[in-house]
Length: 366
Ligand code: IPM
Ligand code: MG
Image (cartoon, rainbow, N blue to C red):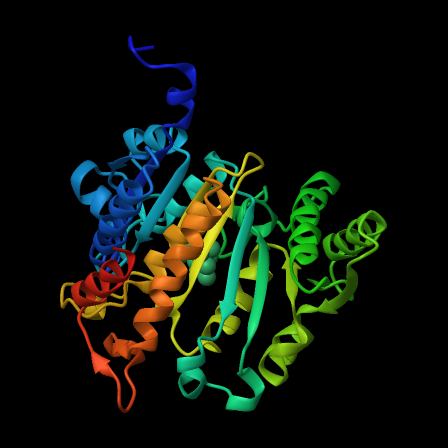
């Protein structure tokens, strides 16, 4: 320990790792990082920052989408802010070199099993939703997706030698279901106390077990109303009447699909943050949008999802609720004043660039 540092100061010095990645990732992370440094300064939070390579840009520089140095820095940090990974340039690469491998590697290496994907419709974007306004007005639902198990990681997996055949395994054990179940019940307790567990129990044994474990667990949370829904029905209900949901909990693959449906209802995925946490609340925070290579480098990407991802980091990993609320309020004020990036532009609003949007939010924070 360096001389002159007390134990408390060492402990308070939380580390944030920024992984800008590919496409619009660096542009939106730049704005989020500037804001992060400002919030750090204004509130004397004593956060420290570093940056590392991930995804396609890491592959270009090192031959690997998730270099050892990056993984090491990720393990040593309290929160990770990730921009986005991927792009057409790397689509033809072998599976193990693809940028997406970095995401899956970080999730499993850091045991980030609990993925929070809120779908909140900003009041300004009601007309941008793909659904009718009255179905989505004030929509605020939370999908909690299991992120380190299920068919994404199940073994055996692979291709059969000698013939054109391939296989994956959907597998969950009681502990994995219970730990994501607890996260979901606790999240529901803090919201409207409604939890819908989504599975495919009419066909899959793994879903029958999922339903059994969640039902058993519900006895510990008598204040939460639990329901079960089959995934095909859940997909239909989400586009029919999304406001019937409060919190949805589901496995890795179903959560991947349902969270994209939910995101689409909010008008622009340029606004949605997400969090992936382990059991110590260490987390990786990323915009729900991808690397959007078609608009990369043009300065028009919406930095709000990245900025709100940082707000989530403040809340979930750094226990700085007040600071997170402040930041969310600043974003809201800027939207109130009519500032819009291209993706959320509508009649009577002011179009701004990525940098201008960041600057407008900064001016509210100051
Ligand atoms: C997501 C993405 C990833 C996933 C891909 C890029 C591996 O679709 O975070 O939803 O399937 O989990
Ligand atoms: Mg997905």
